[in-house]
Length: 419
Image (tube, rainbow, N blue to C red; front, side, top):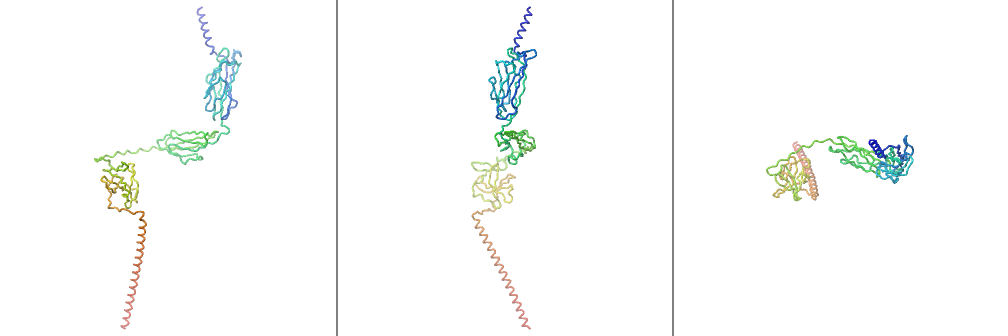
């Protein structure tokens, strides 16, 4: 007797606890839209319809729809939630449907949900994996199936078809030829250590969208980067960047630091700036002269610029050998004596320049007219002297001819008298 009562009690408990889990009628949820193609800016309506059918051992009374709970998922980047019955709330890609204690429906129920099309693309609406539909009265959960709704959002009728770029730049590197809207292909060269480039592209139309493909993971040699411009109405235009990544260059051989001499100065010529003056160090200290009168170019030399340790120094180099390694500097030694010094860039040596072996070219620009006048006068005198010399020679020749003629006539007269 006790065992019978135990089994009756267990059966009662199991029957009470399974009120919401026992399978009852079969419910089908159908998502529909009037037109599967809409345009950006349009508002459209999606209907959610529940159809319930009783099983073979049930009556239509058992398939009445009671409470309904579900989540509706949609593409928030393509469409936006507008309005729905009060039992439907949410947004940003998910709507919650909680319809509890709703009026009894015989075997179907419909919800109208309105959305606004935001952007071109394919929109998809679906219910979460387990929507719940309960029978009225018993509260049993129905077996539920649902569909997935897809619709296409096209551009608005007045959408722009402009897919042109107004500017195109890369970093690092520089495109070649210079950018022009009508040019679709460009060359770019980047160093070996460049594995990606940053592409900056501006569109002529503000509603156009730019996409870049192939700008990362650059391999050595030629790479293709595609810049795709999509107009507001979906028109596409592609620009191609052929990016050449250079091969690895061998590292330069490290140059050992020069040893220091006993004087404390490093070998070679070095330059520094102290108190606004340029100082050269070479087994002593020399200051680059700032006296403009000391800068007179030696004959055959012309002014140039020499860089020592990044310091700019005025110097002179031979006019016929501007690429020579020998320079003449105007320096002031530690005793205040200013003179010429010869610097050998190859040997890194500095020595005093022998002024006795050079001529100082000191022709001032304003005296050029006097020099030209003197040269002209000198040439005139030369012509006069040459002319005078020619006249004297002609006279001498004439006198010589006269003397010879007179001498011959005299000889003839003497021969005549002898006869």
